[in-house]
Each structure stands twice: as C-alpha cells, then as structure tokens.
Length: 230
Image (cartoon, rainbow, N blue to C red):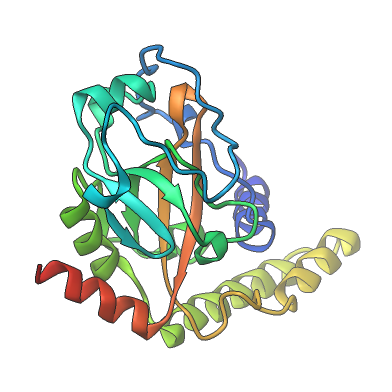
C-alpha cells in the first residue's frame, strides 16, 4: 500500500467513522456456525429472552445489558466459539457509541483497545484486550480508556500529521487542499469532554464486525469500578 493510500484510510477512519470489517483481516475469525436467524440490525432496546436467560441475570452498564457467553447462546447467535466474548442482550442507550455504530441485541464484544490505533499517530504498545467475560470486559474498558485531554492530544497530533503531509503535495493542489480541510475539521461534538476507548464487536450469524468508539463520562467510569467490587 502506498503512503497516499495509508493516509486516505486513516483519514476516513478518523473523520467519517467508516465501519471497519476486521473479519476480513489476516487474523479474521472462522466463519460462525449457523443458528436461528436474528436480525443484526434490530432496533436498540430490543430485549431477548433466550433459552430462559433473562436480563436480570446480566449486568447493565454503558447503556447495555450484557451476559457472559455460554455454548448455548453462542450457538443461538451463530457466534464463533473461537471468539467467545460478552454478549449484548439489550441496548437501552445507543448514544454511548458513535452515531450509527451502536451494537444491537445478539452482538458480542471482541476487542477493547486504546483509541490511538485508529489514527495515523498509532502508538506502539497501547492497551489491547480480548475479554472473555463481563468482568474482563469492564477491566479492559477501564485500562484502555483515555481521558478527554489525552484524546484531544491524539486528535491534535493527527491534524499535525495531515498538515505535514499536505506540505509535501504542493504539486497536487487539490489533494493538498483536501488534507488541509480535513486537518481543520472540528472535533466530533459527541467526543468533546468524553473518556474514550476503541472497541470491536461481532454481529450475530457471521454478519461481520464493527469498529467504533465508546464515549463515557467520569461518572460512567466510577460506575464501572463499582461493578468490579461486586
């Protein structure tokens, strides 16, 4: 991939929040086994009472109700046993996620990581987790989340990279102007002042994955720490 292509990909991820299909990467999961059809795009708030497992046995946090994976649930949702992870059974508040990128009932978390890998300022050695249960998921979110100040620094570093790249394209005025415009684009309003981590979740029945970001308040982080004490 050329340097131009790499920057275009990075810019697209940062400014337009395009869904990334990690299932297509080299370490993509095996094709999930077939199961009863569940609409991966079911509306938020849909409650699933599956095989007698009701939401009161789950944990509610960050606008979702989650349960630990079981062999039966994995089969019902067509989720790969190789990637067993906390399963979402209800979404009460999708606003914790980037607009249009919230999970729905039947999705399962796969990766929790520091936001930097989604930017051209990718920092080596940043936290990266594959939680197997709810307790590990909460721990991962707390470990991988950056403060509002840290996230703004990542954004500013990205802008600097784009401007530096633009200066090398004086013989390509249209491309140069495009990069400068992207560098000046305001920070997303739903991310200002928020604690943020990057997540990847699986859709049920082999319908791919979604890479997005969770936006939290300091109060949300406090609630997660309290959950770990229970």
